[in-house]
Image (cartoon, rainbow over all chains, first blue to last red; front, side, top):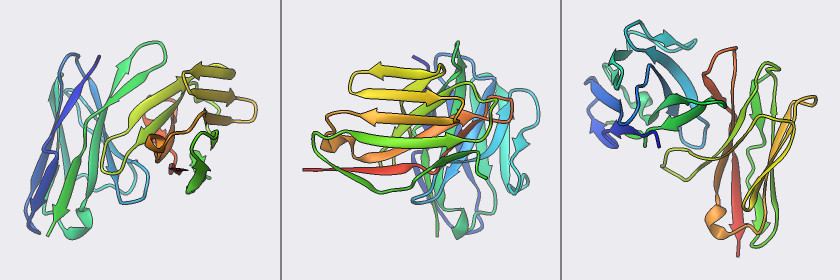
Length: 116
Length: 111
């Protein structure tokens, strides 16, 4: 089945630095990638939608200059958290629609970001 | 009103019992509904999807959809301790394909 590989699975960074998270579709072409953030004991909140070859669409309240999204190819989407702060510490998950009659989705394994 | 709503729980059931998880949604345009299971620190994994009114069964799991009432549920029969997790209800909203999640219901299956 469709697989999205997400790296790194865990990262610790210093406050003020930037972190890049990659999501690769391994056996299908992902023209769209959804990026979610999940704080402890909360649900997944959609941050932005990336589309191959065009600008990402950000949800209300998400700073596009802080969370840079690039979808340069049909198999790779990246999220860069710039000037990270402790409040950015969270679980970041990507997801790609895999199509089909019911519109399925496949998820990356998630990235646990800790900003110290 | 949130687009997808669930009771956060925790819902505790004894081993072997039926666990009933409920979800309501506000976007009448949503056509398909998904139930995901998420273990702590892990990514969600798909349990079931449903898009027709009525029941859909898969092993110990039954999804129920009532579009008139904008209600979708998940029943887990013969609950096992390994079923202890957070269950997320999700639906595409806003006329597109972006998936909106409920807050999730924490299920605890006790020995």
